[in-house]
Length: 435
Image 1 (cartoon, one colour):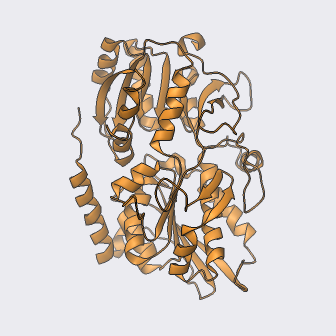
Image 2 (cartoon, helix red, strand yellow; image 1 turned 180 degrees about the vertical axis):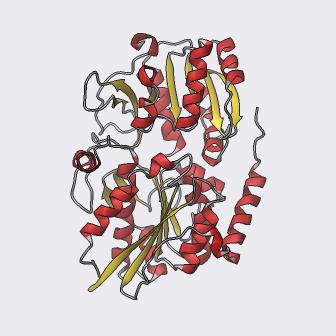
């Protein structure tokens, strides 16, 4: 098993990053952006995402969404009887916590943004610390709330002073996993392994993570532990799973690591009945690259065109938003489209509710009681699992070959036990039935 970073070491690393940001980072460490100087009637909104690196797929829809915002507010945003221009300042943290410090420093201390949007786990953790230190409103999403909240040592009775988060929780994920698995006959032997980062640690946590759900469900677990981002050989883990007769493969990793793992599994003759792994099956590209062996991969579904929700900004249904993306880009819609769009829905609603978008205290106060119906579902920061956190709907799904459709594979909803308002589209099929 790879060495696991302790919570104490994680806290030290977070504090080191925060101190570095507050102390300032040399200009040579900052990416170059041509940003116009903003006046008093301009709202500056920074965005930190993994534009490059292992999580770059999560940022694929960012530019397209910026286009929607720029077009919608090309004549300005009306707040409190005044018209404000919106300036968007995107930054790349290179999909890393260390890469977050210099760009957070640039946006918060140099650009002095009015608000920071964080559709990224490392951004939520690293930049969130600085937002709270400076009193700048920050809104994050696209990482389980526990991974963000407890990594930052949040107080469940208070939340954070300036940062807010909306997404589902790891407990919701596990309910969907167990619900899907219960529909297929297996030997109840499950194998797990985890990417070694904050989200991976959250998934693997014995008290709050996947292990806490497996035992009570009667599943027997073979845990292969954590692996480093540079890992290229999964033969030891595959051997453990084969020896244990594992029929359900799970855990957390990204698409590049799953490609290696699944290719090496085929070479070794490892053939589980179910593969439900958080991370690698969120995107069509992560399935398409697997060829025929991508048929039947199962995953959590945060958002699809089938979700029965609409945008508070444009009035578009989830289906219409996805269709617009496909028509504009020629690409298959992906799950982050909904959440990146909803991030702007929430941010703009908070600025409007505050009355003065430059009054950061007023914006944070408005956020604490914000209730909004978005394209990913209702967001309500006042009634979440902890203050400042709102839960959004989650269902389970399976990728299936389209047999001549517009795209190679399609993601079907196969379980909706935690969100019955979202309709089921198919049944989960074991891999042996599809091969």
